[in-house]
Image (cartoon, rainbow, N blue to C red; front, side, top):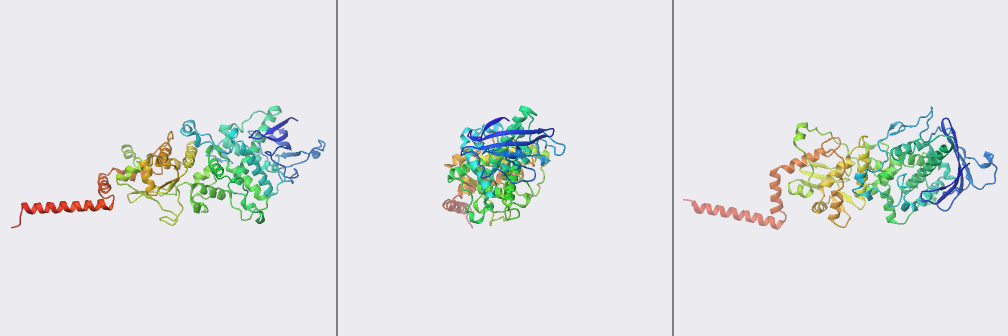
Length: 546
C-alpha cells in the first residue's frame, strides 16, 4: 500500500494518508483513507474517527479490516458502491456520467472559465483574488496560502456545529456531486478526463480525485461560513455566528474575491453540503432559509443599500437555480421584464445608427438626466440597478454607488456573459456597462451626474471615476443593434432622436446660456424688455400718430 504525505494548497503538512483504491469494471468502488493528524493547519478528527453507519457509505477501524490494531490514526473506508458515484470519466450502465456542458442532464451555460487574455490585459487585477482562492484556478498561488488554515477552521466549525465526529464524514457528500463539479471546470482543468485505469495510473487518479474532494469541502465550508448560512443551525444558547476575522479590510477583500469569475464554486456543491449540515444537525423542516435566499442577502449587502438586503427574490426570478455565486449576482441584477418593443425595420436600422452620448452632451442638447426613484419613490415594485429608461424627454437612471471594487465586479459579470454568450445567460450587464462607459467617460460627465445624484462615488476624484469607466468595455464583443443583446436599444433610440432635434438644442442652449441662475435670468428678461421698449419707441418716432 503506497504511502504519501499529503499537503494542503498552502504547502503545509495536511495529514499522513494511505490510499487504497478498489477499482472494478464499473470504475472506482472505494477509497480507503488512513489519516494521521497533522499540524495546526490540518483538519482534526473531532473525537472518534468512526462515524455512524449510513446508507451509501461505510467507515471502519483497522481492526475491522483485519490489518491488526493498535494504531492511533483514524482509518476510514469510503464505500461508494451503493450510491453508484463514478468519479472522473468512468461510467456505469446504471448511471452514466453527464456529458461536458450539462449538469444533471440540463444545459450548463455557466461553466467556470478563465477570463480571455485580451479582456484580462485591460485590468489584470480585476480578475485575481486578493486574499483567498476558491476552486482550482488560483489554488497554487503562494500569496494566498495563509487562508487555507482559515478554510480548515471553517470545516472544523461545521463539524462542531453539526456534531459530526470527523470531516471525512462529509467526503461522500462531495463525491456525489463531484462529477457535476468537474463538469464546470472540465474545459480548463482537465479534471474528469481519463488518465489511466488500474495499477499506478488508477492510484494517481484516486489521489487526484481525493485532493479534488478535499478542495471542494474546504471551499464550500468556507463559503457557508462567510455568507452566514450556518447561523440558523446554532442553538439559542450558543451565541452568534462564527467570527473568523476582526479585520474589516480582510472581510471586504473576501467579499470581493467571492465574486470573481475564476474564483467560483459550483452552487450544487455548496447546496449539497448545506443540506447535509441541516440534516446532520437535525434542523430539517425547521425555520432554515434556502441557500439561494442566504446568498441573495449576502449579494445585496455587497451591491445594494443595507435596508434592501431582506427583500425577497423578485417573482420573475423564482424557480431559477443559480450555477454559482457570481451567476446569482447576475440573476439579481437582471432588469425587470418589459413589454417587447416594436422591432426597428432593417432598412431604417441600416440608415440610422443610434448610440449613447456623454452626459454633458445630453445636458447641453436637451436630453434630461434624472435619478430614478424606487422603494417608496415613484416605483414600488422590484427594481434593478440596470433598469434605465427614457421617459418624458429624460433618461431616468438608478443611483450607482461607486467603490474601489465596483468596476471589478462589473468586469467579472461582463466576462461571465462573454464566456456564456451562446447559452441564454443574457448580456444585460454588458449593455449597461457600455451605456455607463459612454455616459461618464470624462470628469465633466461624472461631476454632472454626481450633482444630479445619479452617481455617488467614494474615490479620490471625478477624474479617477471617469478613467475607470472609460475602458470598462474595451475588447468586449457586443452587438448594439441586436434587440436580444441590447435591452437598452429602445431607450438609446429615443434619447438619440431627441438629442438630434435642433429645436431642442436651441431651447437648451438658451436655457443654459441665459437662464442658468436667477440673476442671469432677471438680467435677460430686463434686457428683452428694454429692447422691446426701444423698438416701440423708435417705431412711434418714425411713424408718429396723427
